[in-house]
Image (tube, rainbow, N blue to C red):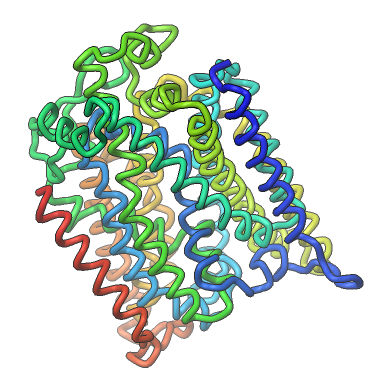
Length: 547
């Protein structure tokens, strides 16, 4: 046991606070029965700061704290492009897509596809998303969370997976999105405070007691780890099996700025149920857009919390600063240093008190994402599968009941599959690559669905159906093609097919279900414009400094 009594007090205090908060906000007024809007959209009553906090708490999880720190250990600051480009993507989504969603009054992303296309497109994408959330997202977060418990407290992986699943279920399944979103506000405070504490101590360790000096040591000792745009052959990284591979395969040069990175970011932030659901639950469009701006500023801060500690861990290992630290970085079975053990190992060097806070931050990131993913899985299944095919006459109360059962089943399946991820070196890259099998199709059908009135349902169905097969074929035929570039190629192929099918089938006419978009729809408040300018300027400055 590596946590002292005071650390355990801090950690369990956090646990009781979250569970208590979740139960408290889940209460209903006497005589009111929880309905679909209450359970799946938090009664559409979230203010901007709750929207922004919940967006970040849902997004930042073990895949960032552990996975991205592991990628920071292996790749360096270049992995931060996912965070900084995400801030820019949030602006695009807030301006061009969110107004359309809120105008339509939808519950789910498949629901939007039904409104724009037809039942076939909605059902196809609903099934794809359910499989992705359960077998990739929930599974990977459970595995990485259990890995942290194993490294820090020596908790067996199986018990860690079960414990985290139960923790997330206790407060989220009864209360739905309302419980998830409001507890996320508290989770973000722990996440940022604990994360910054870990970064500070790690920098102090490499800087001989001076954190600012430690940052300079990082730039001096591993200058290559501060390059944002990687060239082919510039950096070789561990493959998790004792060998090496080219980092360019993960982050292929300028593609991270002008290529496939936009596809994965827009698919995640613009068309991803467990992200957009927070914005759909806002009091108004203006509150939702302000929430996006708030989340954008927090995303700019994230590399300091989740990437820099990984780079510091690399310097500690390279310089042999701490023998016990190096041993903890090794896989207990193979003896190979594993990148994803960087953050859990760093937590062990924190002083008493701060260790409990940092562990609470990591747990907050894990359980908030688990709760969000499970809630969105239940939303899609209930609203787009169950209510359509099994419960057409089902009551509101039964919808809530089905949603709760679905979340439980999703947790059970993910817990069974999670241990299979143990052979990975960088789980973060696993998540990005396999999510990228579906991202090009998702991006194509939403982009053309909103901005091209001639897009037909059959064209969208082709785009949805071919995304995974095309990605698999390109991966097998061109294994040296970076997955970010592969997403770009698949999108271009799908776009060409969808345009051709729509023009032939529709004979040049607008599709009956097309969306009428105009400049008035995309108007934003002055506060939003100021925030957008600030975020854009900061991103430009960061890439100028670390090019």
